[in-house]
View (cartoon, rainbow, N blue to C red):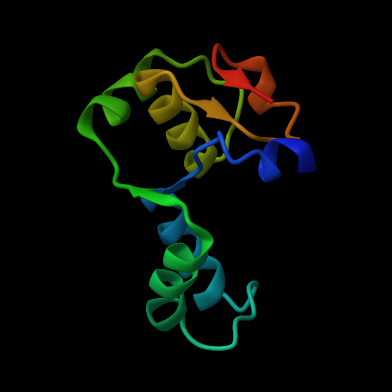
Length: 104
C-alpha cells in the first residue's frame, strides 16, 4: 500500500462523504481532533495534495443498483461514486472488495 501512496503518478481524491462521516464521529466523541472538523479539514485536504470531490446525484442514484453487501451508508456511497467515475478504491476492507468496483 505504501508503494501506491508514494507513487507520484497516482491521484488521490478526498470525498465529501468523508467530511460527513468525520463530523458525525467527532460529534459523538468517537474521533478526537485537535480542533473541530470545520477548522482543520480544509487545511489537511489542501496540504495532503488530494483533490476534493463532492457528492454527485448520479452516484446517489447508483446506490439502488448496488447489491446490499455493505451496511455502512458512507462506504456504499464511496463505492457508488467510484463505480460511476471508474475510480479505484484504496482499501483493506474485504467487504468493499466484494463489490463490482476496482480496488487495491
